[in-house]
Amino acid sequence: MQANSNANPANTLNNIIENNVTDYILSKAKTVEKKVGTLIMFAVRGIFAQPERLKNEVRALAADGLLPKWLGDLPDPLGFLVHDGGASSIIDAAYRFVRDEPGVDVVLFGTSDPHHLRENIASLTKPPLSTADRQQIVTLFGHLVGVGIEAPKRGRQHPRAGSGRS
Image 1 (cartoon, one colour):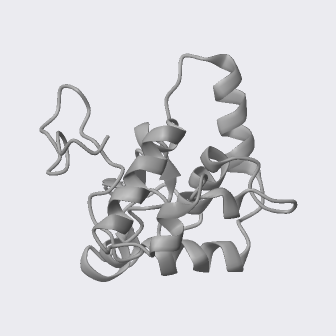
Image 2 (image 1 turned 30 degrees about the horizontal axis):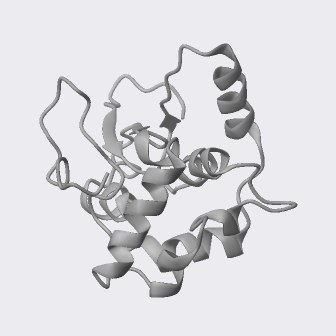
Image 3 (image 1 turned 180 degrees about the horizontal axis):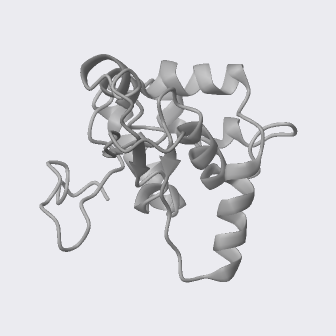
C-alpha cells in the first residue's frame, strides 16, 4: 500500500476458520475504497498452534452440526492443506490464507522464538495457496463466526471463551 497521509489502519481478526472478514473489509467498512490500511491480527493464535485443541474444536463443531461429520472424524481436520505444492504446515497455511484475502495490507505476528520468526517470514513470502485449497477453506468454514479466536489475556473475553471446548 502506498503511503497516504489520509489513510487510517483498521485492525481485524481473521484466520482459516474465522474467514468471513473479507465481507467486512470490502463490503461494510469499504477499506480499499476509502484507502484504509487493513491489519490482520491472530492469524495463528492458539487454535492453530495447538493441534489437539484444533481437533477438539472441529469435533465439537461437527457434533453441533456446524461442520460436516466426516471432518470431525479426521485425525487432522486441516491436513488437506499440507501437501506437495501446498502448505508445509497448518501454521504456514494460516498465514498464507489471510495474507491473500482481498483488502489485507498487513498480517501481524509475534514470537520470541527466532526459529518461529524465520518460519513466519518464510510463510508470508511463499506463493498463494492454491485456488482449490482456498475454496475448500471457504466452503468448509466460511459460515463460522468466533471460532479459534480468543481475546488477549488483558482484553475483553471473546463470547466463545470459557465454553469448555478448548
